[in-house]
Length: 322
Image 1 (cartoon, rainbow, N blue to C red):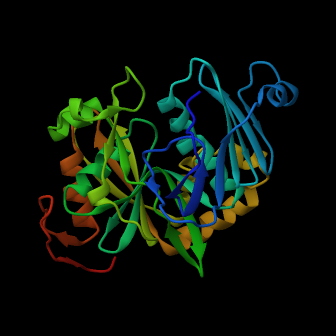
Image 2: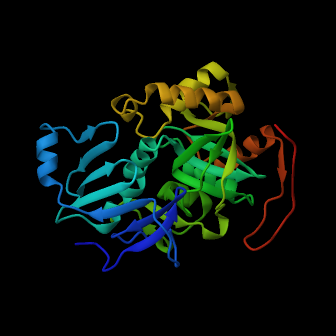
């Protein structure tokens, strides 16, 4: 069974996390402290069989979520404070971690009334920008191109957003990106240097410890990526009213919102975010690798002026307010 011989404390998503499962993606805490979230192994078979019906893989209530990934595990998230996992015999450790750091963490955030956006958040001149989009839109790839210009990663995949004194804030997750083979090829990166997210899959874990921003940042904008036919890149501002729809569409596991009784809460938080930030649509051609062009256009439209840098080189940055 892929569990540690001892409990290990980590920090991610704004939480101190005590875990019985090794989570090497996360930053480890080497001093004694209280934990906010506990990840532990538990036999969940009987509970799953009682609470769920045949052919359904999710059971969701206000403060409890169970889901099953065939051949991997049953997971339970409770009160935003506990993640339990029941690993099947054929499960691989990479698979267990993938769903703990994804769907489980998204559920924890919603149970705590923290909005989880699905995308990549980057730091640009002291502000956070969330790059969102549907699967395959190029969120992580665009974020990686932005990091290559000297900026930093705040979160990849699940972005925790809170509203504090009227200001939307993004909490850092952990220093890793996930990139497909196609993106590695576009950046000239050799896949042999990186660990596949899951064995035999062409998506890779990319450590970015030297490009990770570890403090909360105000959210200044949301950029929605879309893949389109044609060859032109298009950049358009989204009207505030339509921004509510954009935020709902790109909330992580948004089908849980009504099941958890969070429709009114989600609308209220989304409205507060829309009133504070700008939202944009960035349309990219399906036909070619456009990450560098997207970054040029995005930084230009945001009126960001920062010279690209090589690793280990420090450059000054100058920006104008949006």
